[in-house]
Image (cartoon, rainbow over all chains, first blue to last red; front, side, top):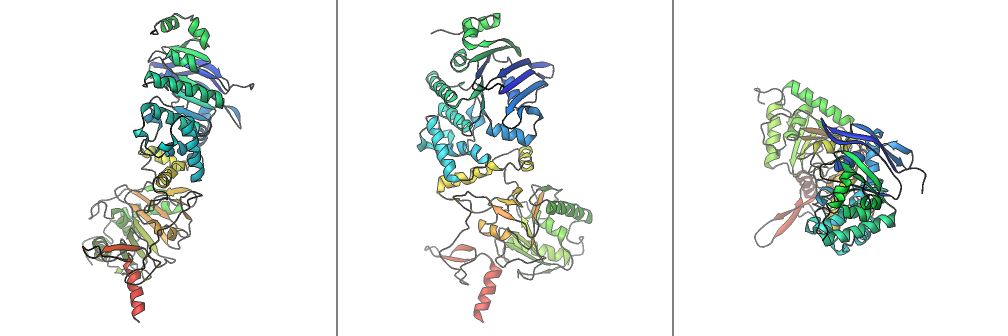
Length: 258
Length: 279
């Protein structure tokens, strides 16, 4: 393991006017590690994620990322072209709704190939080959490569979105409720797939979810958020099996047991 | 000549504004310069951008040619030519070699252009990235950062669907290795003529209020893939009237029995060739 974190967040705060989005969040993410962020809706999970992934400028605080050439740098101090390049080559963002992350008007193959073309791939045969490989990896029949994503089921669209994000071999993936809106059996398959991909590729990931089962399966460490603040923070099993903060205890006890 | 109007219809201040926009466009090849487009006595889509650009650059000693789909005798071409003949009194011509300004819709003449000529294009939608990004703020940012990778998605889709790049007109080009440009709806057959052309090429979009330009001898590259290089259309036939095998051909339906003939779309080029063959 390297001696430097991949992402270091210090005192990150985002305010919506007088309202708190998230407040004083600090943590470090190490290479190969998956951090889960759980909490009820409105607790600031998604705000935090968009601040981390440079989609929303934080009010104060620092987000530093370990770039390949310069080491740890504040992502908000990077120039716009560099930040775009970083988002394309080093990062992936998996949206809750696949329609936000996919180009619905073009074929599945073009969706997976687009990030490659965006970083300069200009050989049609190679792009197509890579797209086919990735569709196969996320368990989509490569025969459906030239179909439009709108003809896909919700689970397939989500897997397509994952393929599109991973095709450029990112080091860090942000996921916002990756299994939200899918039925339980599809969720299970998707989680299985995600877990395998994350281990195989040595990815680091930050997963926002309100589903503790998802967090248990994917995340090594867990942060519990409430009213914009991190109330508890630790190894996943520790937090879920021995919750200390009253809110976490409530959260864990409110999971339905079939 | 109609004396009720200022020379070339527009008032002098408007022409100055247009010229400033044109100068800026020429200085930054392929960059879309916003300008205050005026109402013209012509419906949008008929060349309001083109005639404003022509009005700004035309002088009393110019010779004007106007073509529509390559032909000098179609409604749009005739009415715009007559408009300038009436409001400026300049000489008009149908011969490409005699013209100093050529306003066009859809074609570049087959006869090679020369130094000192100005091509004026009528542009319906100037933004090449519009189909993939509806937000103007975002497309401007993409231009500023030369962030054009996604443009290849369109070509990818063509190959995936048809086995070859099926876009045949308004084919995206990269100007001076910097700005992505939409060459107005000319067929891709004409794209190679834009590359290092000795003529000054001006593009006006009236409804969208944008002017852009390709100065003489500027590189204009059509986008493509390494394994699917850019190609222009070819025809199996020769022109039925002049026998040309090099020009852009139009298919003309001649009867309701399935009769077809292929003729040059450039009426001046075809006519000149026929005249040469008669002698």
